[in-house]
Image (cartoon, rainbow, N blue to C red; front, top):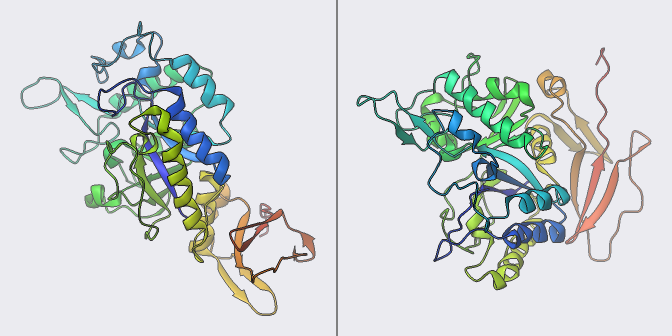
Length: 361
């Protein structure tokens, strides 16, 4: 699979020339793309601007609130944005970025508060934050989400790639967030290379590496021009998905649709339906062996048991090149019906129904 992950949604101010507030139509642009491509795009949200009651002021690692916070701001339609996101959750996933994108650190040599850009890991001094500070951010996150009856996100993209990887530490990022429902994390491993991160399941969370050296975070309306990446996801930012002139938003959306359609035409790639399918397919690609001998033989015996225990697997997707005018009329798995089949851009997609293994398997 190959798709983009979109960072920095939720901030009040845009990167347009005059730093005007984000519009609901900026979010509509992402939904427009999702509907046309038939995918649910994973978006990483910073939530403090959605805080109705300034609860972040209770927490010293978050307070003082960032300068664009104002609970009395009328131009930023936070309630309407959340309402829109809920109604269109089939096309835009509310993923976790952070509370404020940063960590206020008072434990420095001058004993003065400084703002560190890594909210979940100290990327300046390359060390984990005090677990108490992390728990404060988790609590604040819950309080803000509860204001809108939003559940805890399953997907995470840590700000500035600051992720504390440590399979042996009960206070690693995965270990601290898994109990709340986190299942998937993707980040740039080069930013935390000293931690020796490995793609795979850590504390029940599936961690993958993503490509991050493509488009600047403040490049308004800039679209990827490359389709060849070594990872399953590519970092982009909210600003890349809207236009300088809001009336031209759909022109930017159509350029992104063209990019996704090019991905669909790559023989070894496909656009996943959602982040859960992307991660499930990553596991199948890594641990399954597929042979073609008068049919399709799938060997899934190397799949780690943690993938089943933490419910990280779903339907397997097989992509087949079709000849001009060719269509598949029937497909089955061991004589049983498959989950679904569809065709797109000259390829057939066979979705094999996932069934959890029996205790003896």
